[in-house]
Length: 456
Image 1 (cartoon, rainbow, N blue to C red):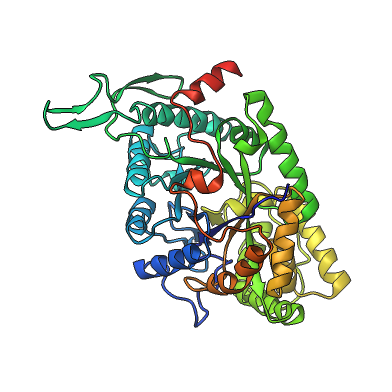
Image 2 (image 1 turned 90 degrees about the vertical axis):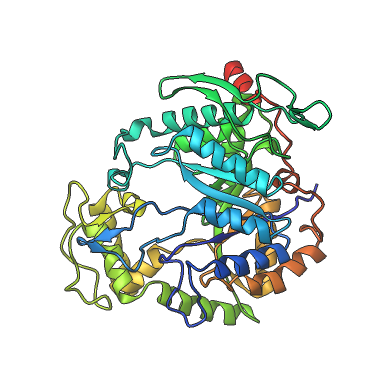
């Protein structure tokens, strides 16, 4: 059976994907940018808009890193405001389970789900970063090996809260003066190794039962967490074979939790560059990559590998011949990407060999080594590639990240979406009213998560 392509749009913060210095780029803070971006996604009949989070301004060499500061407005304020100016688009927010508390987060997402008529979704993430944790009451209190245990306990607790209200709890009978059906409404008690909470939850059940749950990550623990709890997994895989392997792996884990493959969607992030022809798109993509990786950005990336200040180097010169500083990483704070380079000596050796073999400068090597999955080509080429990935079970769709915001999504919506529609693999109109409807996910029964955990 031909699968439908799910599409979503990620509004990125200021980072090395976004070309914020492009004259076509707008503000990443003003609400009008979010409105224009959401309008384009809804015009393209996308499933949802996605927001990542940035909980602390990143630093490098002891200074604010203004090439990647990730300064973002508060997720709940932005998504709640967007609920008022969109009608169908799902609203997915990334909220950390390491530094927050279940009651507050559950109340905020339940409220978003109510305000949007059942279009809310929660991307549950963890944090290993004590530097970021300093912004919170407990600081970087959680050892890395416990972060997913707390995340599972956090989601268990939040789900108990979401399920405290029956769908028909609010009766609002004016004659009898009865507003809620049950005297036990909102009553909850939840105890485990991380939380001991009891009381009354304040927000009624939403039209989609409870918010859609996303999980972001690629580690074994992250995959297991997604298989046991999530409705969708946000990931990244650069090739068709890597995507198929990941897809088969996470879908294969669902059975041990009594779940079916269609209960978890695999949605990688992807960038795109379009041109009238494939050649034009490739030339444009090369220009975009050099804008994304300026000379200064190349040096900052290289510092993640060499673990030392490289500001005196020429980014258009050769890859450094000296070895990285081993031991604890001290040059960059607040960036997960430094963990990509676990063996710095091996990475430096690989970069030197690449530079020497292909006569590439340090900047060219960084451009090559940090490239993410891109769909590059004419609208028909991009549409065909996306559809090939989905039909080959490398994904169930993609979360698109344009390099220019807020208007960078428009060309995709205007040229690629109509082709996918002509092929019958993308909707021509919204048929459901909730995000679960549009993603093809069933409304969860109250208490089903606890029952699954007991059964497993």
